[in-house]
Structures are given as structure tokens and as C-alpha cells.
Image 1 (tube, rainbow, N blue to C red):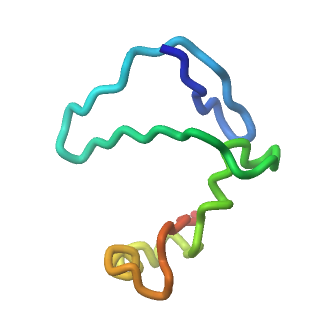
Image 2: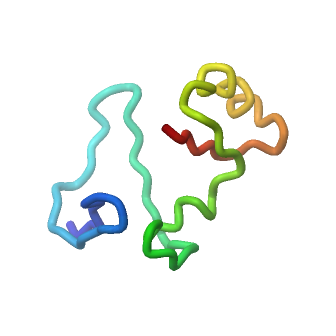
Image 3: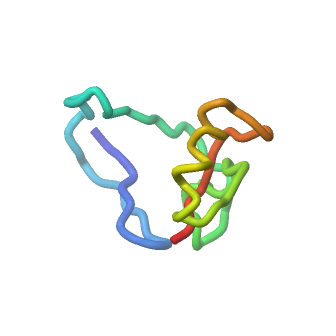
Length: 80
């Protein structure tokens, strides 16, 4: 099947890949049907979907906010 694969910051490439499969209980298959942004630094439009951005070290305490959908939290971007 064809898939757009991430090659690094600002770089994606269409490639032939095997069909995805769930191998572990923590796996997920995500299908992106459209992108929202045209930013070359974010070609997949991921930042358009982010409702909260937090430093990586705050991830443990913000996990509950995401899980409980508090403060309108839908998607969190972790910054190193």
C-alpha cells in the first residue's frame, strides 16, 4: 500500500509499505485523511490539532489532564 512516511523534520515521502497490523495491546493504527496546515516545518499539520503544549518534564502531571479532557484538552504536544 502507499503511505506518506516521515523522513525527518520538514520531510515526508510517499512509499510502498506493508499494511499496518496491531501487534501489541499498546499499538494503534491512525489514518490521516487530510492535513490542515501548509507550514513547511509541519507538513502533516500536526500543530493545528494541538490544544496544549507543555515541556517534556511536565508530561507525568499533564497526563491526567488529557485523560480527563480537562481545560478543553484534546491533544498535547510535548516539547523537549
